[in-house]
Length: 245
Image 1 (spheres, helix red, strand yellow):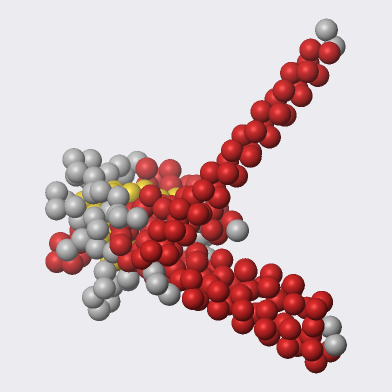
Image 2: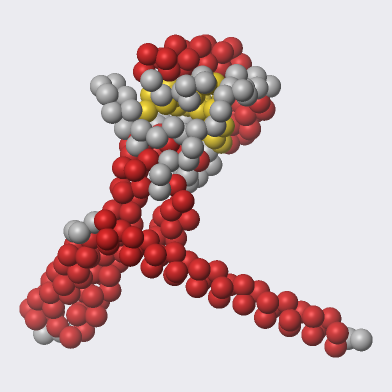
């Protein structure tokens, strides 16, 4: 009888290893597909990646020559070059995804939902049948309202939601942004960076309390049709894989 639990445990470990290998193969497959897709669309990708490896290797070799250890530093230079090449690939994939998403209904909500860290995102808390929308983010800076859509409609929508929110959160800072490429708006590609640069004004416990209070407000966009995910959103898992590497 004692051997049965040990055998079951052994089988469970084997199954876990198989799942881990399968997940790893899937990540590599996604990376390869993303690379092939990006390479076809981005003619500068390969030259930049290869150039970064060659430049880093040459620099390391040159420094090594000066100290008489060129063959010791060369592998280090190649390794650094590979890291730079992967970084270039990740950045250009991300830039391509955001370029395709820009202007698509739901793009801002998608970008917010992809943010890393302790951000509480509620998409479409207010909106219109024209697919204009206001999204709410709760984070260490406070409450952040992000609007997307036609400027002449979302400005009033955003002002109404800000007034509605202020009645609940009291002195908690409220920030508001309109996503777009016109003057005074925040470009989609800069949205995540803009939010992460905001000052930290509240604690995690305060975030929990604010989230509970705001949940009671509900949504004023229940009947609003959901906008389609922006083009390229399917590459979300690829971006995460690139970041992990």
